Amino acid sequence: MSLPLVIGLGSHHGDDQAGWLVVSRLRQKQFPEASLACLQHPAELLDVIESGQELVVCDACSGNENPGAIHCGIWRPATLVQQRTAEHEGWRQRPVGDHAIERSRPGSHDLTLFEVMELGYSLNGFPDLVEIWTMEGTAWVPGTEPSTAIYLAAVRVADLIWEKCRHA
Image (tube, rainbow, N blue to C red; front, side, top):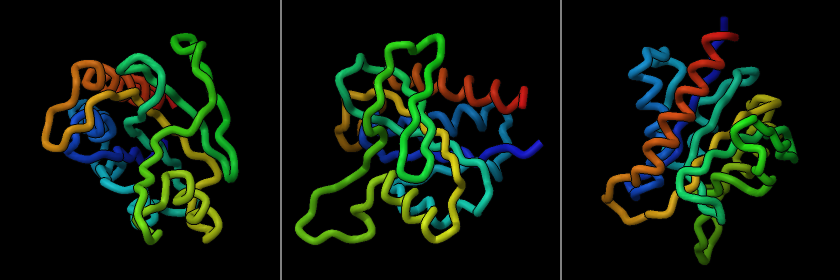
């Protein structure tokens, strides 16, 4: 059985640690270390992903949902396909996990998650399908701990990924 590479995107800014918390929980469950990575910027995906490898990306997001709300989507080149689960029937399609930073001069560190995936795909070095899990956060203060809602959401996402991989 081939396991996906599970990427946790994040920073030390409060709820932005959500993706890292998912990876930490998977480590506790003995998910193989070679299939886990914590990154700070989506552009780093281009350094760790291999063509044909299954990919799962976990990240915090900010929207109109309650703190800790979980979203799951499937990315294919030029699309985000809505995926519904029994738990999250109300989820609507919208950009998730976008790490864009406004600057006066755009550069490679300004690329959003979706731009990085499109670039990787165009260079023939990215999977045709990426599973994206996001968790709604509210606190983004540098150096602070994640909220309880994000911690609980990250545990839930990690458990869902673990179960899916165990039964694959």
